[in-house]
Image (cartoon, rainbow, N blue to C red; front, top):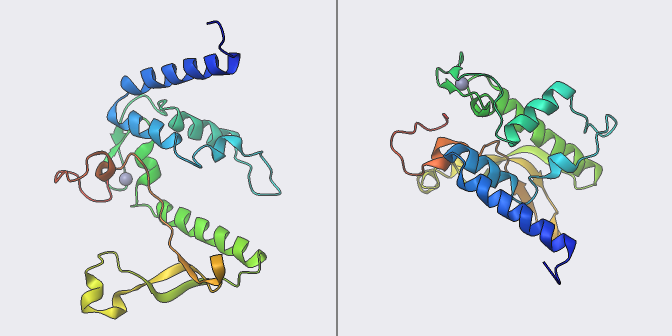
Length: 192
Ligand SMILES: [Zn+2]
């Protein structure tokens, strides 16, 4: 195409390929691919492996993570989750979001602790689980009982602009039924 730079042509080809992949994807794969396009999602791909900085992933775990992000199958067929009896899908999505075995809680705590340590190193004087700061899970509960407020995962007494900040972390996934089918009464909360 005269007048077009190589970079522009490559970008047009990439975008056409991406659109074709999305248009033929299942609802779950569509959500996975769209999630990879969100800001910050590609940090995993760009991180330089370093054991010193705790950025190294074992090869087997790395392959599984890539397979999931590229919508590849991790096993041949769907099975039943031995912990909660939901479908253990062959893409491995349920194994990442099942809350029955406690892994999701451990991931959230690991994320919270990492942010806490980083804030402490930065001299921000963070506090773990400071009580009574965040709105309850159901905001209406605050009208009946001020004690219903939840603790902040990490409290920073002096953050942007000198103001305090209460950080709240959650481990979630774009493949959750509530995200894929909002308002669907057949989708139990917390299960894939
Ligand atoms: Zn499960």
